[in-house]
Structures are given as C-alpha cells and as structure tokens.
Amino acid sequence: MPPPETDNFRSANRVPSAASYVQALKSLTPLPPSYLEMLRFHYLQPARTTTSPELAKAAGFKNFRGANVHYGRLARLVGERVDWRPQEEGEEKLTVLVEFSMHEGHWHWIMRQSVAEALQRLSWVEAGFQLMPGEMPEKTELTEGAVYRVAVTAYERNPVARRRCLDHYGSSCVVCGFDFKAMYGPEAEGFIEVHHMRMLSEIGKEYEVDPVKDLRPVCPNCHSVIHLKAPPYKY
Image 1 (spheres, rainbow, N blue to C red):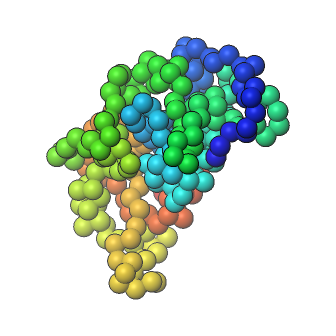
Image 2 (tube, rainbow, N blue to C red):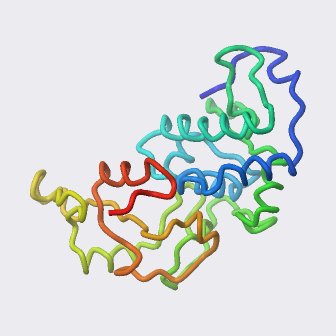
Image 3 (cartoon, rainbow, N blue to C red):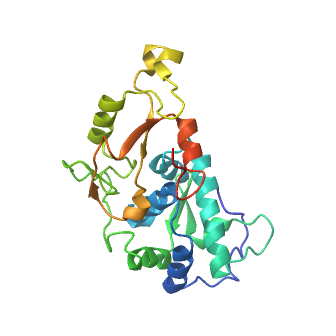
C-alpha cells in the first residue's frame, strides 16, 4: 500500500530512538509468530528493503493484503507506544516502521534504521547480518527459526521436519480431521499446514526440532484460529 502523495508527509514527526522501539516491542511480547517473522525477514533483506508481496509470502499469507493488514496492525500498536500519530485520518501508519520508495512501478518498504537497531538490541536478529540478492545459505540440520535459511524471496521452515511430521501423523488436520485429498481429489494430496507446538517467537533462536513432538498437521482454518491469540490456543 503506497503512502499518500503529499509533500509534507510525516514531516512533523521525529523518528523515535532505537531505545523507544525496544520498549515498545518489549511491551508487545510475545508477538504472534507471523509478526516476528515479518520483522526478521524484513531485517535480513538487502538494504533492509522489501515489498508487501515478498513480506506476505515470508509470513505465509496468501497475498500482499495479508502483509498490509498485519504489518499495519503491528505498526499501529508500535505507534501507540512511541506516540507516532498520523497527521491526518487515514494516513499510512506503516511509516512508524518503514519509509517508502517507488522503484520499477512498485512500492518498496525500507525498514527504519532505529527499528533495525531495536531488533538487534532485543537479540531478535543477528546484528549486521543481511542476505545478498539471490543468496541462500545451506542448512542440513533439522532446525527451526533460522530466518536466513531460505532465499531472499521466501521464508520457510525446515521442509525435512515437515515431511517427517506428515509421515508420522498423515495429512489430515489433527484438530477437525479435514483431508484435502478426500475432498478435492489427488491434486490436493499432502496439502496441509504444519503447526509448531512451541512458538518460535518464544524460543528466539534456532533449535533442533522434533518432528513428532513439536509439529502437528492442521488445516489453514484451524491454524488461523489457533493463532488468534498469543500464546496460541491449546488443543
């Protein structure tokens, strides 16, 4: 979502300090996993720059609207705590976290430096680490939470752990029992999401995952409901 086109957009606001962002983010913990993933993914991008479709994919949303809504909600919550007030009704709240730049017909979101410094101070990211365009470090262990595991255009959890989880539990939702293959045919075989019993935002670092103990297959509807609150619902 682009910012409104006005010459004095945000000119009246002074960017909060890293310390202010630290206090704001600490007051919001534990963050929903998707929020923490978006922040980490954004931090890792070259020049701390991303687009809403890239951010949406990183957090597992179906399209860019998911990033607009949820990153926007996070921005609103942070803005309330650092007294970042829109100058006019409807003005873009995301500016408390990002600056906007138009490039090749797309709005790019640039993480504010003081936000990046706050993430470092909170130890939510590896200070100074950034991916280069197209870079994808190799990982072989069954680990979760290493946001630099996948290329710059995607953020995924360990696929080997997912496969072993499904080998054990099958691909039906453990909450409601829904089976995509039974409903939609062989094209949907194996289509299911995997829920982490331990929140990655609580762990805060890479760890070795037990696919049977730590993971469960759940349908998208049940997965969404599970994460309606933080910490998630138990089942």
